[in-house]
Length: 288
Image (tube, rainbow, N blue to C red; front, top):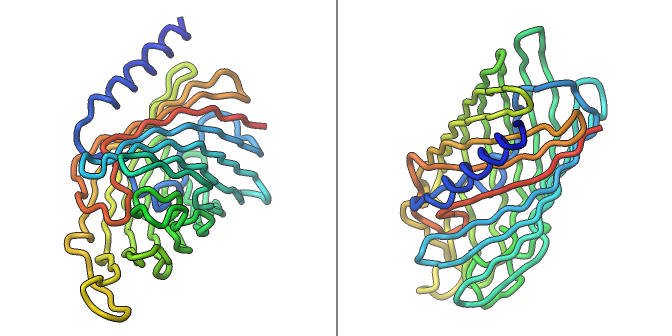
């Protein structure tokens, strides 16, 4: 019976993903990957996840995305966790195909306060430009496996029972070296709330995420001589997404998970190559 329910929910989840025609995305620059969700079940010291993500840009670019991601977290000290996330990205479209290692994300999460019903957690992340923004210099940024900047990310989350609230800030690094673009992104502010629903071996975690780009991105001005830069109009727009995570626990050590995002407010400007018409992911988590 549990397997039947699991198959039904996974099928329903993916049907809902591929019926989306609007723009669904978090900030692939990294800010949505930090933060603490409510603990569900016995705490494990080592978590290793492998996942596959599929996505598609808007029709203007007509680029499809595939990503294989390794995500590892380890309890180094009491109430302290370190981890890293590294993707291998594949982008393909009418102009060609590019693949390679993406940007590495290093994460430290510290539990600042906890009691029987609530907790306060803070995370610090460093996104390193291990991906090559010039993997194929003749193709635009949307095809490249990396953004080309070293960023700092900060989040803080308060959890009460099954409810959580969070704030995050991504300090974008300097200008990248992408030929004919030299992109410098604006910083991102994240406001998040979520609720965890558990029954039997299933967990469903809907999250509402508001991401505000605090300043406009700038690129190389190709209409002038020398190295001059211009701001990209409307590149500081906001996003508001409903992001849902579905997890099925096979036992205390293994779990399947999947994720879908539905936009309420969408960002149309795609100078950084992060806009998606849809994203779908599925993966396996192993805990010890």
